[in-house]
Image (cartoon, rainbow, N blue to C red; front, side, top):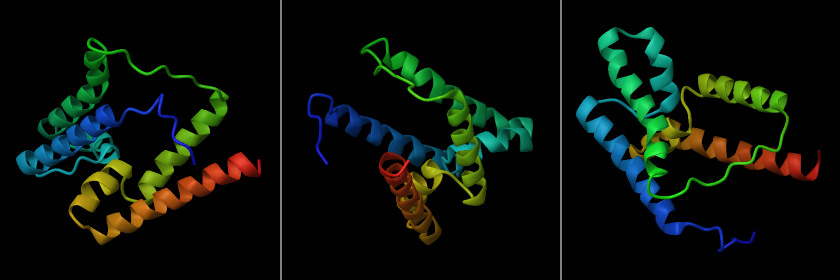
Length: 142
């Protein structure tokens, strides 16, 4: 594996990781909630208006944050080079996987591992192995 140092962004990547960790720690310490995006999104329709308010604010923050960032620096260019059907299928499979795994990478990977949850550690390792296997299969066999 080679790193394209022209495109690498170690400082902004570190800053982003620190901000994600800080946001997760603040949500846990101030609300007693885990910052798992699938749980936050899924809980909007299931909970009371009082409980859904913070969920909506959290999700709005996820959308508004890059827009605010773009006031200071350009956002990375995004290129979608695949068919819409494949993207929709992949999204549905990810959604199914988060339901089967009782959470997503943000809940298990960021928050669960930080709490030393054995279930989250195993789930995150499984996410990584399946992701690597999927990339290998699609790049080398299909």
